[in-house]
Length: 586
Image (cartoon, rainbow, N blue to C red):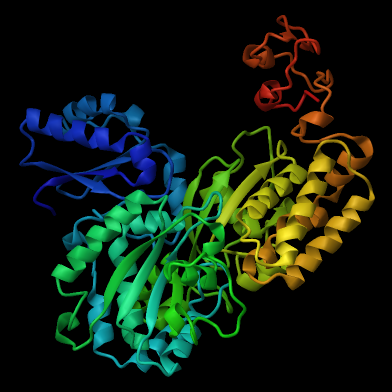
């Protein structure tokens, strides 16, 4: 039971971009106008992870909950009058069945508070056991905490999956009076937004995890390195730090324990390479973000030459749950080698896009077809999924039964990475997608080492030749040999993994490369230079959709007739190809 009913409005970056602030304003105005302020309160929460913005939840005093999706200010008056006053939910605005299906298959631990509490109200965090884990940790000695993290089996969620407890132990054992804790929030993968949503929806969980880590390794200072492109996250975390300090959870003599710890925010300048630990450290020090040779590792010699513990947002967000519930609870989730849950950012050609937190050991297919809801368009089946961002690999349908496990995914030629998962259907050209990711890593390479600086650029040039119809058979051998050379000789993780999209598409979709080179044909209808822009009558269903979207009226069609494209008028914009569900245009 609650004193007032609650109106939760998801207003992280995603919600704000869809108009959440205006929805909040309109709700407040209507509640004031109808004199309902003693019965209902509007609460601004973070994004829940499913992009149906603006999402609004009505929770009455008895706890009954109704979720509305795609809400705009124009809907608010009707919701207030029908639902809040008359007790009749507006059925046509309520979330549909697949909304609930999206969350049904998840096990939300790190994301448990996202979209449920106000990230700017520390009291709401405290009501959900906030900072209880810190209190418990301060009653233990550092080695007991580290042992608990080790026994939990938690591995770093930022990419490589290194055992978190072991990294903490290295930092604890390092001989230095000064040590540092860094939260890596430099989320640079295309299509990834896990860290942003956690920081915007549950900032105190990350802060609490960092304080516990600081106590465990005997550090007095921590930094959150957050990309400047996340202004909402920076704003919310900044307030959370102030509130935590006012309540005695940060600063000197935390909770009377004698332990002191402070956290500062450093804005990253948007370089993808700064997600690499040593480059990130250089950036905080005010230097150009470029990787360094390892060893020594940051745990031995990191920020300003002192031992430094670096974990990402999701890793720190897991700590409070492990301390609260125990290592046995956490290690019971997942597989033998990969414990707990992992958050994935599901994007691309799938029905439900958003954040999915699943137990390790869940198969790729379960994520795509249960939480994801299957292909975006029923007649265009899913063909592949890119795992691990621009450093990951493209996996075909016959590998969708692979379990999400660090080692199992590596065997396929992809990586778990930070959790990016981009879904591609039959209208995706795998050669073009490899070129897209390689173009990204070429642009983001710091240029320090020759294999990455020159090798990646040459691979990109060859891929461009293939997609433009100038490919040769020897190009396939070149891409394979150059890709493996770069993987084995680059200085840092960016170069070591950058060839993965090319190598994995060559491994699983070689037939598409051959079609581009030998037949000068793009099977997916993407590479414009290889398209004839002709209607394939065997596939055409005479629907006329292509005519409606053609911007230059180059398509002739009459009801019951096949479409015809005038090559003299056609500007090769591909609008007709995109609209056709039957892939009837070459």
